[in-house]
Image 1: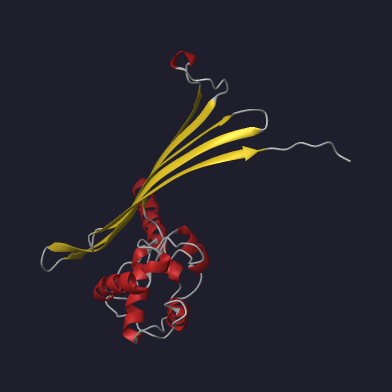
Image 2: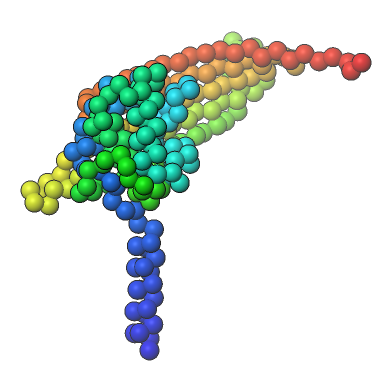
Length: 243
């Protein structure tokens, strides 16, 4: 009886795992590989090298994308991309290029290539083949302190400082069982370090210093971009008697 019960529990567990496993994506590895280059040439200028979005261009990978598209179908995404992209110049690429770009977007959201090539008419729910997940690590540390007056500093109030570090990486490899090796389809990521410090100069004035360094990379195409940002803000508060 105990052996039968254990077998039943194991079978139930296997069924549960199978129920949440993602299906193979409706595209091939070659489509996604070619789509990465096409995306870089036609889409990355607005949507970012790692599909993170910028300004009015929405992200094409990650939680935000899956929230918007997880319950919609692959053919809906294909038709929208084909009709409106590149921005202001829809239908300007050949059909095969649009298929490859959509395949790359699916790949970047965790979908696994399958044996059938993407045609653009697949009524497959995106959430059934992709989860939008990527490797992410972050550290955030904050502390308040005062500069010693013995060093000549005259600020009496606490300086509230915070330092943060975040790294996101998404990479996909395809195993070739026949050749006993693997090939990398995508390897994109972002690393950032940020610092924020503020203090009260008076009862009505707050001074803030912010700085950050952001590195984005695409190892498949040996691309790397570094951005530095430094800004200062004076916040002045006004108080008045109510009329």
